Structures are given as structure tokens and as C-alpha cells.
View 1 (cartoon, rainbow, N blue to C red):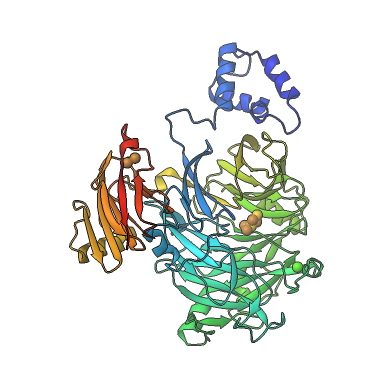
View 2: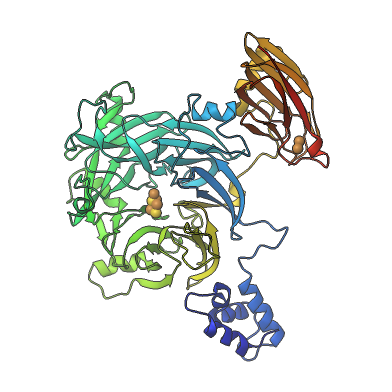
Length: 631
Ligand code: CUK
Ligand code: CUA
Ligand code: CA
């Protein structure tokens, strides 16, 4: 047991920005906990002191067998997947393949995943940045998670009941979907997303000039995942967010110059935030005031300067993140090349659209926070937390005070600056994008880890840091190395998501397998059958740990073989796999699921298949042989 002097010495000995657990156990935390236990201020017993210190230190520790309070969904950046973490433990719970190929689950290999990715899937990569969870009346409803693909101009949807990607839409007429947010109110009817780069319209080789290139703001129907409409804008588009009335969405533009070179994109002191009037856009589409481009049938409306569908609010300089405050009052645009963020009052936007006020009048505050402000998040108690990329800090500031300061009052709006390690991009406070922002935890996604972890060669992991924001002071409590590149994450209370423990036999995820089985007169959960249809062979196979329903089947060289495996186990967690040796075939089949994969039978000979998800003491014995005969 340590005495107070020892603990104090440990703190002072901790290197600057060093061992977080020691720093975390600061005097304030101890005092706070001691007060709460009602032990009085005079003398604290050594035991009580140690217990209080332990409690403070362990706040983020989830002991073995205990569950986390929050789900965290992390984008996988140019790795193309989504990762599910438990917060505050920061333990990785699951990976959800989205735009990538995944050897374990067979994502990108199975027919079910190809139905989602497109049967003619040609891309093996993706670049996802912004995961967001569907909402009803400004609160997470736990139904879907949506995420962008900048690399190949797509938007994906994940069903949160099974944590699988169930729809992917390629967005026409534009390139590189970056910023993505959801309509919050009345519910997520639209997925709003920004295409970043300007291209000629149509982009068919008939035009190459930058002057005639544009980009668009896009709205997808969240249920059908079809593009509802697109809005042509001036400049480019970076990040976006929606308000809490359902009326407005806003996006940052860092390239109002429409330059291709770096110097050119920095020429203007101010770029802008473009605000979209959703009601007016819908009315324009309804009234037929749109065009279509090339083969696309998507209605395209014109939102460039002079349009009544949009307004352009000048803000400094190459702005990046755009974040709505959870009280619904403000859009905050983060200045990046300016040390400021711009606070835009949403209740002034009606007047802006009615031309009753000037273009800069909705800006009600522009606090100076530090170098390289990228993203802002909120605690629901009136404070904002902005990442400062260049300063390697998070700045906690008070919104009301920043507005007072803008109006000439002498107030200090900055509450604290905390070093993070290093160069933070996004940060995200628990439930911050909903009305339920609870100000408990802050995750900071630091782009560089430098010296924080054991060296692993020239390519370093990033560092996702966990900060306790429940008190007055931010406290860094955990370092978490991550693989390229979680741009953003979202935290949602664990009770806001309901997952299935086993599959339902008629789940739409494998509907095409069910349909084909019906045509073939096969009962998926019972039959083991080989059906030949010309050079197409369909193999239906059941599986119960630790056996497949079929230990041998015959095909001919060059046959197009489809294997359907149905897992008959009803016990939670007993997933099987199916791997056909030397055929590039692997897939997951979880309880009551059917998975299928199509491949071409190789050269004549014997090929073993085996279960590659450990399911039983006799898991190694779960296998069979495919006999390939001469054609
Ligand atoms: S962006 Cu990466 S740090 Cu794509 Cu949200 Cu700002
Ligand atoms: Cu079935 Cu391993
Ligand atoms: Ca610029």
C-alpha cells in the first residue's frame, strides 16, 4: 500500500505527457473521490486513501468478465473495414468487413457478400472515414450504421442487429465520397454525403477543364440506399453535418479556389460553409426543376451561388470538420489553417435564406483555440472539445463564453488544453452527435504514435487515446494503438443496440441462397444434395459441430461449383467455417446461417475442405473431400 507522499512523488516523477495512469491519479481526483465517500477533509485513513486512489485509477478498467458501457464503432480508414470496440476498456470486440476482403469471414469471396458489393465487384479496396448511426428524433435508434468510401465513391450500410454490411451504393456523377452524416430529425430518412473532388459533368472525356468541373452534395434514401438527389455546388466539399430540425445540412469547403496545387488551395483567406435547405431542395425536385447527367437517373439540382437552395457562409481558412452541437443551436466549422473555429447559429439560417441578413451574420462566435483545429465534439454541458492537429492538443472551450467574447465581453472561453500523442484528427465524446450527449468519455484519434509503443518498423500504428471528461478537468487514461486509419469513431450506449445471438433462417442476408434452394427443391436445414445443371454444380451441405453433412462430393474439372453450407447448430457462438484447399475459398457460417461461395473446380484430383472456425474439440476432424474428375 502506498502513502500519499509516495503517490505524490510518483506523479511528479512521471515524465511530461508520460505514464497516464500515474498522472490520472492526480490530487484533484483523490480529493473528489474522498469527498464523495463522505470521509471528511481532515485525516483520511491510509486504507481509505488507497481505496479512493484505486477507484479513481480504475475507472476505465473493465475487469475480466465485465462488460463495457458503450459500443464504439471505428472506421478502418483505407483498410476498408469497421471495427467494434468496447468503451471505456478500448478492447476490440469485432471487425466488420465493408469495402475490404476478409479471409476469415469470406467477405468479398462469398456470394452473400458479392450480392452486397456487386456481383461484378472489381474493387478490392476502400477508404472509409465517417461511421454514423441511424437516429429517430435525434437519438440513436441502433438500426443501421452508415459509412463512406472515399476511394471508390461509395456509401455502405451495416445492419447493427447482425453487424454485417447489407447494402453498398455507388454514387454516380461524382468522385470521392468524404464527409457523411445522417438526418437526425424526425429520423434518418436521408444519408447526406459530400463528394470531395470536382469533375466535369458529364465526366465522359468530352470536357477536361477545371472551370467546368463541379462536385455535388448527395442525399441517399436510408432505407432503399438509392440516391434521392444531388446538389451541384461551387468549390469542393469536405465534411458535413445535419441539424436537429431536419431542415438544414451544412458542409465545409476548403477549396473555394478550385485549385489543383497546394498553394492555390490556400490562396483565399476565407473559404466557406455551404448550407443546404433540405425542404427547398425536395420542393425543387418535386416540381421537376432538375436535370439528369449521362446514364444516371438521379435528379440533380443547381446549388451554386445565386441559387435559393443553398447559402454560402464565408469562414476562415480551409475549414475541415463541421459539427452540430447536441443542443441543436450551432454548426461549428473548424478552421484548420486558421486558429479559429466559426460558430454558426442555426436559428439565423431562416433569415439567411430569406435574405433578411448578410452572409456572415449567422456567425456568432469565432474563438481562437490554437493551431490546426480539425474537429469539435461536445459534452452536453455547454463545452466543446476541439482537436488541434499542429499543437498536438485537445482544447476544451465554453461555447457561451466564446459567443460573449465575440460580442466584446472580456471573458476567457478556454477551459483547458491537454496534450495528446500526437497530432489528433477526429475526437468524439460519448453520444455527442445525439441529444443524449453525456460528457463522460472522449476518444481522441491521434494520427502519430511516435514513441508511445514498442517499435514495429517504419510504419507506425496510430494512437487512439481515451480521456475522462466527466469532471472539470480532462484526464488522459488510456493509449490504444490502432492500424490504419480510424479517421473517426462513434460511441453509443450499449442498451441502444440490440444484436441477434443466432441467425434467423429466413434472414434477407442470405435470401438468394434460400431462393435457389427452393428452386432446387432443397431444404437448407436438412438436405445434403449435389445438383448438376449443365457445367454448374450446386452442393448443398449441412453442418453440425463437428461434422459436415457431406464428406465427399464429385465434380468435373472446370465446373462452376457453388457450395451452400447451412449451420444447424442453435447454440450461441458455435460458428463453422468452410475452406476449400487450393481454391481461394473461405467463409463463416454462424448458427442458423447459410453461406455460399462459387468457384471453378481445379485440375483433376482430390481437394480437402475443412472447417476453419474453431467449433468443437473435434474441430480438426471436421472436413471432407471434393473429388475433381476429368471433364
Ligand atoms: S476527415 Cu480524417 S481527420 Cu476524413 Cu473526418 Cu478529419
Ligand atoms: Cu466446425 Cu470448426
Ligand atoms: Ca482554401
